[in-house]
Image 1: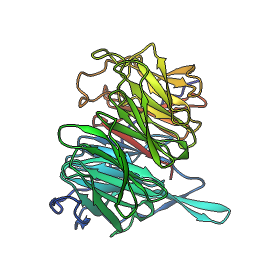
Image 2 (image 1 turned 135 degrees about the vertical axis):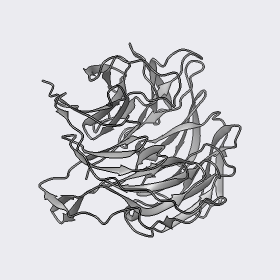
Image 3 (image 1 turned 30 degrees about the vertical axis):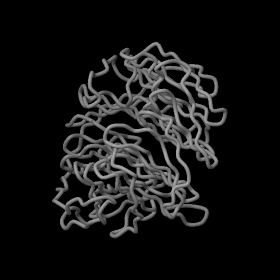
Image 4 (image 1 turned 180 degrees about the horizontal axis):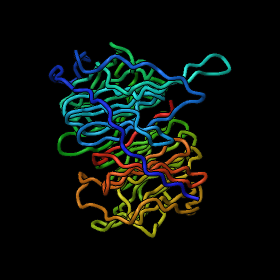
Length: 408
């Protein structure tokens, strides 16, 4: 049975975003605190269990929905919103604007008390702390650290996920060798992995000790793009001809089995060595093949689909299944160990992939065993229980451009 309940968008007061400090040269400038950007937290409500919430980005800000019922919990107005990303904890989301990283409090949390916890919700809000950047880009949350990358300067800032709600979080600042569209991650050992590139090209990765000393590098990955972290802290980025993996203190290249074999988007599960990626098996044709990159055996298995998909179509569920939203409107569930298509769950009407990656298109996001699909046609959002295949739906007032969920 599929439950489809159309929920109206509830009105909520918007919180205005005021101007903050200007950008400086790499590394990123210190965090700034802006007066008047947030209201005081509203009174809290207690719940019997954690309450998941879903942030839905649009050109004018973020709508926060209950992750189960899709009822509106609040709205946050944000000027020049470019993207939202998970922040690595059960409560916060990072928003990237034209010149800042902002921390959004989705206001759902659980206080642990020994063998039990008390769960609460409040009104979502944007926190006062901001991180200036010339061009805010990748956000990578791993091992309790959140790493922010500024494409304009190559500046990198990291902070503890546990400090996201603080007024003045302690940050660590360093930078890439040159400015580029890049990415960085901090491993549990404190070691840093940073992309190598400039304004013309991206060529690979380098590893740094916690004190910033370069340890080793690998520049066999033309067109570095996309990132994911798999089991045993294997860190993967896509290349024009395969993938580059950092694992156990060294880099290794996995070459695609066919040409061109470009990989640029990845979705992982922390307990699985296998990363789901896109796979470009023709120069100009549509995406109809995905790759399962095994970071243990250092191999690539390709899976042909009977549908097209886009770079916003990949996710993983709590059990590690590979999920792909096709242009046929269905979520295709794949066994990552075998490449077998287990089932397809029809969610939305068939759609066409846009010509430009900047154009709105249906998107897939997953948290636990719930998948979320947004559709710019009608501005709808759908929550799919992957166990029962029940679907709840709601319609928003603005076009959805990004999704990020928290568990509460």
